[in-house]
Length: 164
Length: 255
Image (tube, rainbow over all chains, first blue to last red):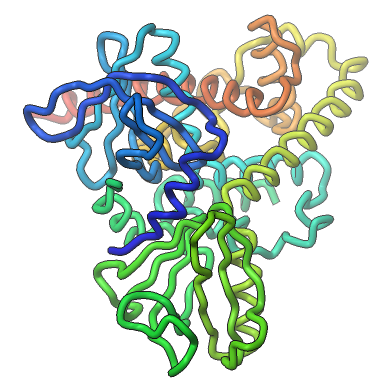
């Protein structure tokens, strides 16, 4: 799969949601933890050698699972292979919690759910669709149907039906 | 530069609904002319969030390419491009050539330009923040309206039911199916019948935040994340309770 690497590198230079030097260990067996500059930009986690300007790599954060790992660290894994983990070491529990919180909220899909949640809440409270004024109420990406087809979405739909 | 390609491809093929799909012709990739001579390569494109994937066909089992749609603008392609219904994705990054694409008709062209223009993470974040602000305002006005008449309710801190609209704790992950029983288990519990839902939803988070020493209306995104944690705890507890009850039921059934 080709991807627009130049543009992704440019993205890694954009203002980050969070950036810090952390210990990082890849998912392969026997990999050693190394100091990396880790930078969260939109739904990508970039990692750099501490003295280099160009990123070593990037992780797309869609469909990922972020878990705290004792002691003072966290891991990122992906839905299709939950045992394959990228490990990160923090300097404090506080930093660890800060990162896990931020990473859990970092995906586009999370934002989409948030938006649908807020839209629905506002509609219930005010009787008005808040997206109408922006002329985007019909956009596919803001519809309930744009949520993945799983138990959660089915419950969301039936809940909305109940409230009508 | 490394990328978690396997996970990216998995996301592309997953059942998360696409924001836009369709056939487009493309110029500039390997195996295609760099200028729009010839008809370009026809591929099946899938837009998910800020990611544009291309496939050989709608049945394609692996994406051919990915374009990350950050730091770009999308516009109808200008002359001298002779192609009808063409548009370009232009990146701010230096030394990056625009991606040239053409749709099959004007409606498709317009739909793609619109969908791609609104694909960035920043745009979604903008809309979310806007709605967050509006929700705070709505809660504030509801709170001030009800404050005078509902003093007794303010003393009750514990929320009565999880909001099933809520996103799951993990990033894009889904709550397990046993959560569907949560609705029924807590009906028979502490929640009084006929409770006004809107009232609870106002009172619940406000009291929770008050008990945390925060203003009942938190600023910006911390409002949502605080609600997230709070609902998440409730869900975890209820799930544990359900599992214990289910396990108890199982043991009873065994001979």
